[in-house]
Image 1 (tube, helix red, strand yellow):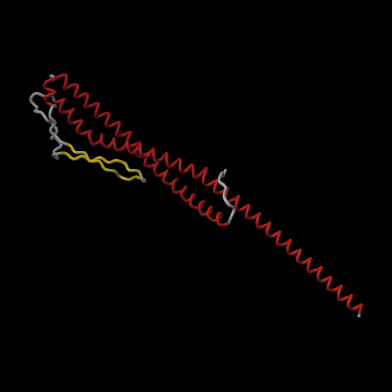
Image 2 (cartoon, one colour; image 1 turned 60 degrees about the vertical axis):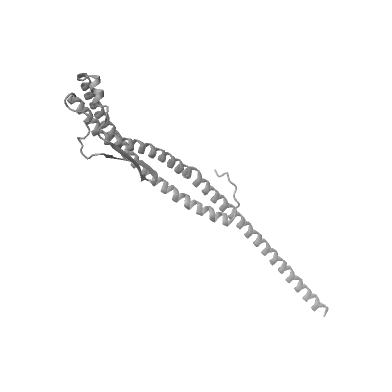
Length: 230
């Protein structure tokens, strides 16, 4: 129910009708935005699930290889082998816009383009399991970064969906019904005022006709009296 008092004038009625048209148009646009956000969100959720399963499987496999390598190597040799990383990776962060939501995008660039330039130790005193562990971790890095993008994107889209849903509900259940009620109320008052004006005009007309009728009767009476006296 509308709680704001408005002056029942035709100017106010016109303004409210324009407001109602704008509110309905905005409601439709926000509903379309909400539906598109939901579609994008569900796509990211499915991709997030797939990536998480792949990343977790790859990390578990790398951990198993590392455990096997550690069981066959001394701690001194293992620490020395992994002390100084060989490959250098630069991470650049940017954003992409999805329905007015800025989703992060991560891009990596390595010092060299050789995918095997990741081993920072010699092969004489290390285990092949250590090579497999390092290789698996290097291969899973792009998926891990993509997983970070997707999870953050899901969080941002979920927040935007919730905000858009609140706006849609506010328009649908508050703004539009209140505006329609105010328009109806003003229309009723204007119609009532117009009917009252018509009644007053008809009353004035009847009074004027009655007055003219009485005036005519008096003229006839005077004319009759003048004829009789003559």
